[in-house]
Image 1 (cartoon, rainbow, N blue to C red):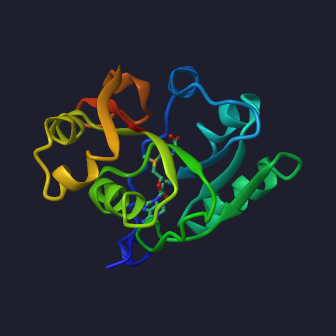
Image 2: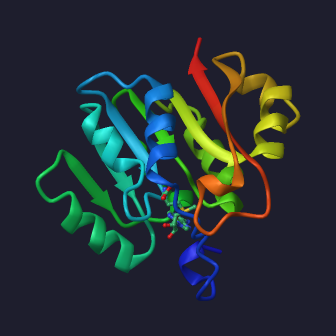
Length: 180
Ligand SMILES: C[S@@+](CC[C@H](N)C(=O)[O-])C[C@H]1O[C@@H](n2cnc3c(N)ncnc32)[C@H](O)[C@@H]1O
């Protein structure tokens, strides 16, 4: 079921503190001009430092009000706001990177989408529930053998709960995937 059909309050609303968002983007090492998807962009906590890094950003957000606010906030920046469900995401036809702090309930769906056959994904830096990120790095997910022929998984930054407002009930970490 698309998340848009979820009850009010079930939107995975845990925005990142701006300093932590900056750290996540710094660690991703974005080069000017790169195409970067920010999936579940919220109000742009990651979008803003991505723009400062010189990225061309596609900000995907399902919540209509947040998508509108993103459009207004980044009207003069190289940001395309797409109101879409991450599960139905149309991937760019050219090489792209992903830097995202998605709602935890869609992280597996999103990863499968990004790693689908034909994807031009170059790298992903995804803020995930730490347990889930660890499972991916251990290869403890169906399909891992196939995906990890092409991508090298590792754990990046570990984020404390206070990196988000409101703080989630679980620890988080950045799952880093780099094309081999
Ligand atoms: C954890 S918040 C993070 C927001 C922002 N990335 C940040 O770090 O501040 C996740 C965001 O994903 C959005 N969202 C929820 N379900 C979604 C879906 N299926 N597709 C796209 N966005 C979704 C929510 O509306 C929310 O803005």
